[in-house]
Image (cartoon, rainbow, N blue to C red):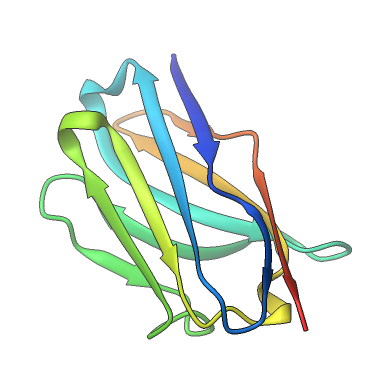
Length: 116
């Protein structure tokens, strides 16, 4: 089992920044990647960013490229999402995802609200 604890969400004005964190605990030795998804009201959950655990290769949705940066701290089993130049359309619940060698886990989600 892997437990994920997210933090860092909140309310911010358009153009502002937030930093999300997701700390993994438990059976983290088989981590292959961690990432972030988001779900806005009435919409499906969508991919935001992903980072591989060994090489740190990062991947982004087109909608966030150039504004969001994903990073990880292997020693702390933590992944971060630095979100800059936030837009109202970034408003959503952001979920952390853990990709193991054979299992995946989701965090409980953290609300990000961007006011115009």
